[in-house]
Length: 360
Image (cartoon, rainbow, N blue to C red; front, side):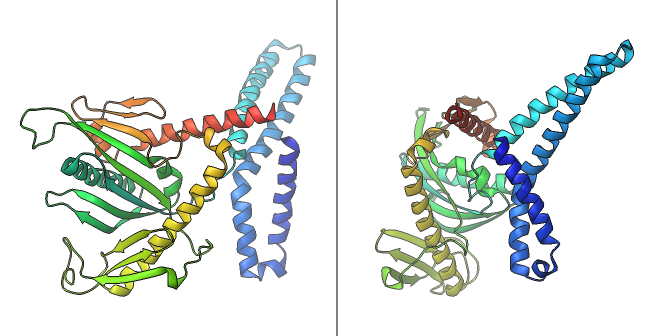
């Protein structure tokens, strides 16, 4: 590990020299590329540099302690040794975490799809509540949200809907939300007071950037234009602005209706299709890396039941990490940070254990 870190430190110093080179400074694209690479490794370089300094300071303190006779000075040195050992242990853990393989999609924006599952109208209502839960959470993080399409029911539910969330690190936190969400409660239409169980699925996909190589052959696409349905502003239901794309090779159908112009909706529909194709590509890659999947929480399967929202008991249980919280109202209003943090911690612990197992 330390040989790898010493090489990284050498690379960091080399990049510092390159950034001071007038020839590179004058080449905007190359300069930005080096800056981006350097920024990505800076936290690890800083942690390792401090780790080396702490080890040097600890060695010096131990040498001084071995030859010091003054009791007051010895007490100070012993405290310094104790603090140094504790800090070194903290830095070792930090470095291990920073050395874990990075998900290249973590910094990307996300596209989330919600689909009502078993439970009819109650499932559709729950899908709409999940949509609002993520809107509130995104707002708390300072991210922007936009509804792309929605197939609404007459009572305020969503048979399915698609939204985008734009913000730094959105995918890194929301990627753990894919799967089947289950609700247990007494529907308003239930006269006998019986608890019903309904489900809705959530699919979180990274937005496919311009640099993502996804080829879409125009011959593989059918484009339909139509009038948008549901609530909306002026132009909705009055002009053929909504766009539906059908991708023949995969059978994927995407729909965009929220923009006033057909051109804008077409652009959004193609962006959504590209994201779906990229998601398929990523899923195939993950399936091929079955061993990696074993080191992550859950299976990553969209059909996996990940969470239960029990309204009579006011609890939410995440089945992957066996976490139960009794603050359902707050969670439904977007307070899901504690669950996401727990998922990240569990995923990190599993990966660290796997890394240590491979090293032994």
